[in-house]
Image (cartoon, rainbow, N blue to C red; front, side, top):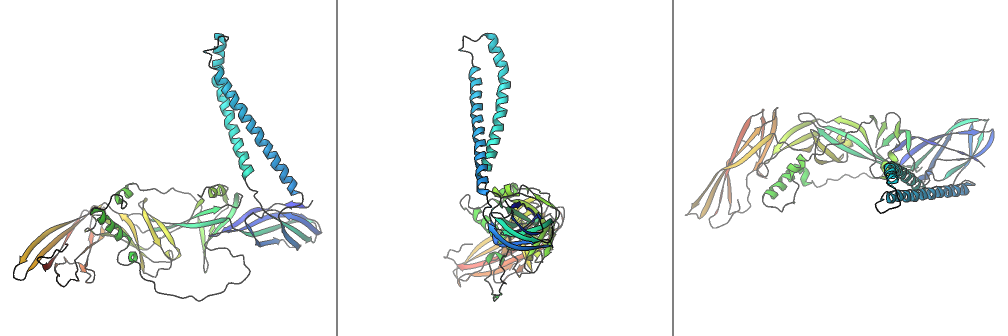
Length: 511
């Protein structure tokens, strides 16, 4: 019978979908023609991706893929029968243990047994605790053994087909070789976090959640992650036309980013929306979710033209990766952390909410240009939500909402509402005046943008006249008022604005 040469996975490159394995082995060859089997192809290996490399002095003859080697069917059958016998023996022992346990417990009740002497009853009761404990211990061990045997019985074979190889060696010797192929049952996906410590620049943290279900554990594997998909084809790729187009702007990325939409939702809730119609911001912040800390070796990033490659330093012991993949968790691996250039600023729209929201205006750097997908945002280690990052954005900066800051207070109040009627013209005139006060209770200065608005109308019977903007920047098209102020610790600043609305006295206008 030809010899079977075992291989061990030594290097692996995990792609977004699939992985490339490099397995190594050693063949003892005689001078001349040698025939043998190479084990190591997984059941999910792509057979058209197989490469076999031998050391100098060996020329390859015929290589073919076979599902079984001669005599293997009978070997597998004998192994299955032996495993089945082991399971039956353990199941019989479990039943015997249960019967003994029941017997000892039944005999322990001597209240209705007249033939038992008092001394015999005392002796029996003294032995009962130790005997029950021993039976319990034996029962747990038997259950564990039964569970392991069942797993072994249900588990598929680690390996699939064999390589049937014929080689010509120049002389007798021990020859190293490598077997490389692509396996479909592995993957990784990036996970992003943006962490902000109040007053410091945001840090973009990149992590990987890796999965592999090739059927074996990887021990001491040199591992790298590649942001691409493997290509086993030998045909060169073809370029296709690259057409650019202007996309319609999304509302959330134009004049009303996600933070302002959240504020608008809060105003709807305060106006009487149904309970449960929106998430309570305070509850979300109070129930902040801390992220589990992982201690992982660093990764080295290798930039290529169209992909990013992370080489994980050191030999990785991914013994638990198979088990974690099976239950859907995968293994979480730290890759890199990069500080972002950003300006931290606070926004408040007191007309809609009394909250003050921290926003990071991040320059769209090379780091952000590599990121596509959602990122979890943490402010002072408290989870504040998610933000979507896109590598294809051409804006100069990205606005990242970081959550509500309770150390800055804002109060908006109406200071005037004067209604008068002009009988001769038949008009009704109403004057409004508002005051907004902002207080900084933080231990450092804070730049705050306060937003409010003046009403607009397209009805010719209604006239709006601005009486006071309080020094705000005014957007004539939208009516938005913007004040930008810098407050020192415990400083308060107040702004005011006012307007007048005229309309027919008998008309109802919602103000």
